[in-house]
Image (cartoon, rainbow, N blue to C red; front, side):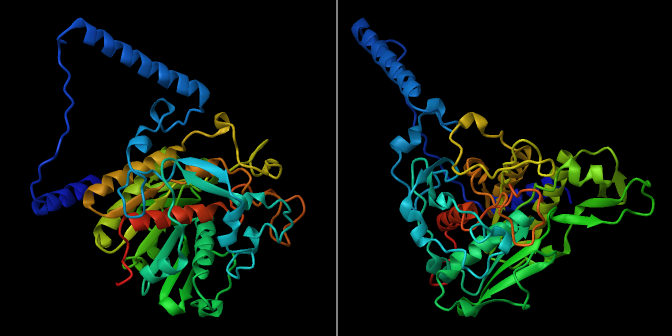
Length: 437
């Protein structure tokens, strides 16, 4: 079924159920003619002073790209947001502030559920200031992450992370953050007895006290990577089935929270340059570019969600692209990030918004019309500053000398903890499962 048809059918169903409402509109009216010239002159002088003040403000203060003329008018007018207030605050935009006390409530690298590759201090990193930066949204505060509250709300439920190894990074962060609300860590275990290691399957951590599972599935493309069909050209070494999702998706129908991510593998180096092309139905398209293929895979993803998840049950997130910070070369060309020990302060050095983010946000926006609890979890802007947060040369023991630096994954504790703080904040705003349920 075409995605637009699915959206249309869902909208028709909603319209049939939706009662007619009246919108309240506030209209500002200005007279076309003033009663006297003195009042007219006074108004013009007032407007001159107003715009002069705005111009003067922008000269003295740094311009924030998300605010009109550098001023957040809504943050000045609207009351301070809280976990139960409206969605006026965009948690994704703000600044990193130095906070010596931020580490007090953090877990440590002694958390037994961390992969060795993310334990930067244990692997030799000595500057630990990267842990003392706290994300401060513009115009509001993030609600403090409360592990016990999150666990209680999630009791008898399932939290699923699906995507690439950056998704695994966030999954391990979430496990350690939630583990702070459990008195006995031995009651948290992998359901199949598998160790926390990098592998190609899936892992499911069970929080016995709360009958909760926090699961990770490695599906870098979300859709199926397959062998080429019999009629494919010889140069086709493999295909990405844009209209067929990975079979793991059948396991997530009843999940309470699903966090998807994709994008790092959707590039020419990991697809067409390796002889991996795109297939729909029985046809392999040899001319389709990666951007179009990614968009088509997102349509397949969205159609599945609409047809298989319950609007009143599942809270769906699609996390945005996680920035990489290789400098002076790509990852396999001597690129590095080990000299970075503080967040970026020069706005001109920030990368542009990745095109994949635009594709994801557009599909998520379309799906909002289906009345689902779906959120585009935008972490790209805040993470773009954190060039200091990667393992860099401090990789897991046994890494060969001269191996490429890791400037794509993140040290833990670290930046992915902030992603999960945003996730928790959105769940509170969306009314995720009260404690009584």
